[in-house]
Length: 214
Image (tube, rainbow, N blue to C red; front, side, top):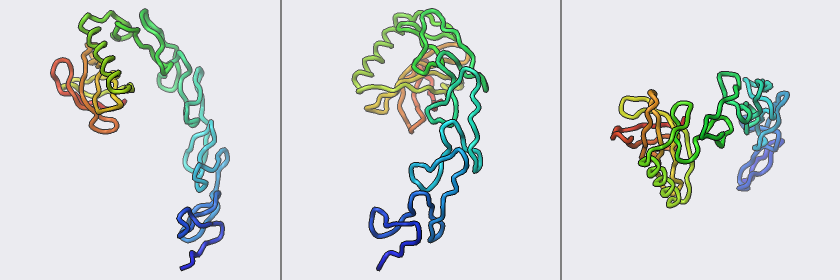
C-alpha cells in the first residue's frame, strides 16, 4: 500500500510511514506549523520549540532570566547560578568565607577541606588517625573500581537527619563517604545504590541509612 504523505511531510527513516518536515508538527493526520514564540527557536527535533539562551519557558512564552548580582547563566541557559566564590542564599548570591585548611571546591560555590582535614560546621579540623586511614581506604576503593563520582545526599541514619557527600563506584553499586548529623557530629557511610538517586547502607554506629541525591 502506498504511504499517503500529507502536505509538509516526508517519508520517515523506515520508508513505511511519514514524519512532518522541520518547522511543522503532527496534528491528527496533518502537519501544522510550529508556533514559535518571541525569544525562542525550534528545538533539536524540529517539531517543537525551546527558549533561547537567557530565557525560560513560562506557559507558551519565553521570559528573560533575571540575574541577581554576582550570578551568571547556568549550563542550560534557562536559569542561573552564582559566580565563582559566591553561594546562593534564596534569590541572591553572597560571598562565602573559605576557612583555614580549605579551598573552593569544584562547583565554585562552596568550600572543601584539604586532605587529612574534615568539615565541622564552617571550619576544617584535623582528622584522627583512624579517619585518615579510612580516607586512604576510600581512595584505594576508588582506584579499584575504575573511578568514582561524588554526589551530595541527605536523608536519615536511624532516626536522625544527615547530609553529606558520598563517592559512588562507577564499576559497581558500592557507595561510601562521610555524613554529618544536624548536631555537627560526623560518621562514615558504606552502602549501595538502590536506584538512580537512592542509597541504602549503614553509618559508623551501625544505624541503617536511607539517602537520596540532594
